[in-house]
Length: 312
Image 1: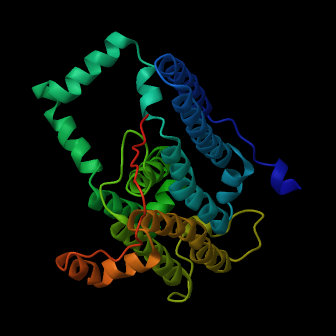
Image 2: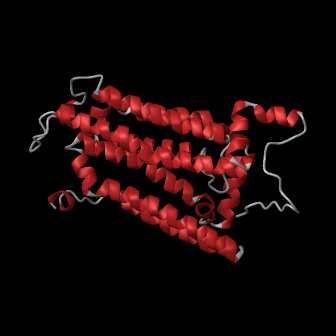
Image 3: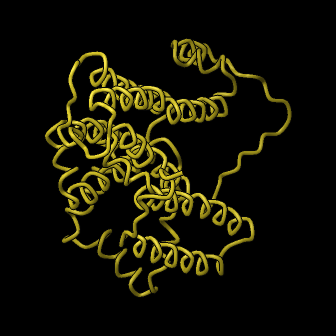
């Protein structure tokens, strides 16, 4: 019980999150005046996912989870998984971009659009935007951030410097995770730029990197990597045993995000190709053979076909 009651804190981030919710609701209200009932309901469903992501972020940094992460390495690994994977996926699923933009007054919104899309002075920003939306950049950043902050010197620095810990470590986790999931999950008005083969491969590669990190911290070493967990007052668990438990959490809990992600990509691929067999044909190259012969290895559809496009 003490683990749940001790260590609650009040982080100023709560003000930022509260202002974000207010701005999002204002944007939803303004969009609702020009939208159909169907679009309003869809935005509200996405809004709940976005708010769940913000609530999970607040709970992670203000609850005893953050307090105990400073005393136990394995708790810190739970915190990292939440910030790197689960908070970003909820934010991306919530697609808050248009509502937050429409929270601005019309004049500011138009001036912002003209500046970023048309003004020559904004070319560096447009180049930066193209970079961060590049799928390969997102995949590379995700894995570099995950590995870099587990380098002992950087990890110890983050644990002894609150600015580095909160702004750089946690901030980079959320940014990298958001850019990664934007390449997997549509987040109106943004859509993934790569197909299901790339998306599934990206999930597998990232999960493999996490697994190799876990193996390096447990099986391939016999010492504790992080000096900040040596001689923590009141902690009787040895630093190396703590590190091994943390590595096991990375190893096992990595599947908690990877398997649902792969399941989502596979279901989307089946909807795209028509059947699991068509996916196999596509991956093995048989699809191109059928296309060359004027045939397509998919189920035959009788009657008229209607194609609809999801709109905001």
